[in-house]
Image (tube, rainbow, N blue to C red; front, side, top):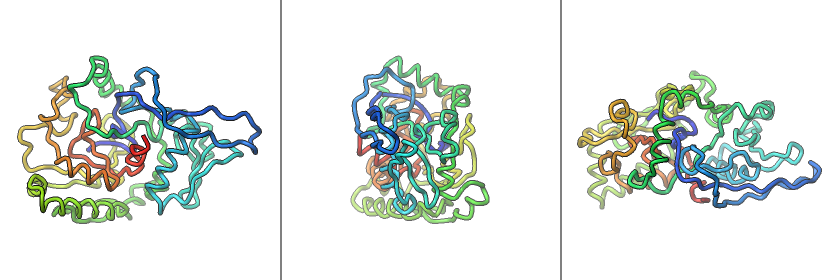
Length: 328
């Protein structure tokens, strides 16, 4: 609902925590720049202590990680990302969005002119989207304390921002006026919603599969019948932060049910009066049917219910996260 570009899953692409598994990196080979071979990319277990970034942190500083991430971007946006490769001269990976070149830049994905200032920005991908919904029954006391700490407004406001030049290039959205040239109205599951035109096609596939599944799954038809509204484009920043929400790009949908059956749907709506909101059992949270979640994920949408700071009505278009999940 109020998630940023690389949150979430902010997952949480912007909210934080859990089991440290990661993308490992090999050290660079000691050769002259023009002879330099790109470091080999591989997935490894990581025994580092709890790092505090959301959902399975990994080594985003490594040049070796770049090949895995850039391949996921290339496969996720094949019509936007022309190529990716290793630039031996600058000893870094790069990708091309049209004619614009972006370097890995320690995971910040920056134009070359900004590469030397990489540390001032947040890593573009700072968590791995989980396969399963985190279950509070299995949370350790340390994890619970960390969720509380990292969900505080002061902590959230203190985090570095993402450099958005890469997303500006992907979605032509450097200014509100520029972006809104790509915002249009469409129908989704019988509701009118404004979104970036780039996600019309994958969202149409989501709707097609959901409607087909509803023919044989009564709970999915009930889910469709009980949709009160679908919210999409809304130019805004994330609460407590200076980063733009995925809604401000028109790349996210919130599916609001007519009735919530006295269940909880978004952590921030109850956190002010329930300090233990992260321990609310999964069966006390409103959720779309599991098959609906899987259909969204199949077509490149991450579900906010898998973030530790959960947003169960929220889906955002992040095909690279789903592809990285497959690599994990």
